[in-house]
Length: 282
Image (cartoon, rainbow, N blue to C red; front, top):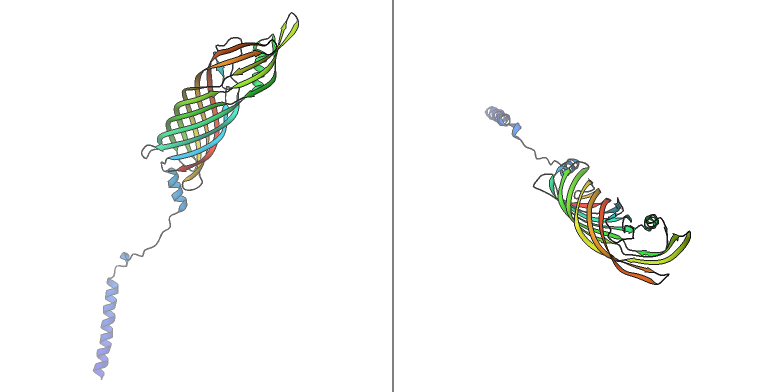
């Protein structure tokens, strides 16, 4: 009996030593516990903003003709320049930018539609300044708008960050339209210390032209979501177009018409636009 007790104690001691040796021989530094780490969304957004990406955007805003769409070199005699009467108007454009490789340089394109109203007050003032011995008063009038459609392509450079800046240069085509206008005026002529009034009706036909245009622009973009951003743009476009139209004058007082008179114009466009919109990053 005593031998069995000693044998049991020896077996327990032997098992304990063996377990201790096994545990002691284990390299706990090699134990790997899988832990799920959640990426920091703010860090992902920061990396996303610095990545070179392309985009497309739709924008709308204000179009400003800096010189009123000035007209020079009018060939029709005895009539003021039929231009410089463009007022503030609207601008709608679609813009895209595609980077070259993984750089912040790339190719940009612009489709821009502009429309400026005819400044009738400026027209009346200019008519009255044209000939000192004449006085013009406007009885009735009807006008259409100046219109320009720009199809442009060029290059852009992006400075990424929390606020992304794009700088663009481009060139292309200006498809432009001079307004049609029709006026009835009282023209008072002073001669021999007397005033002689005539009632004149004038109509200028609307005409189209196409010419090369150049421009540059700057944009500011702020991301609202991962692929959606808001942007503000300032664009300047210059072009000069040649037009040929016909002016029909009719003297209502004496019932005389001069018929259709051919007019040729060189019109200079200096258009500045301020637009805002929303875009999609791809």
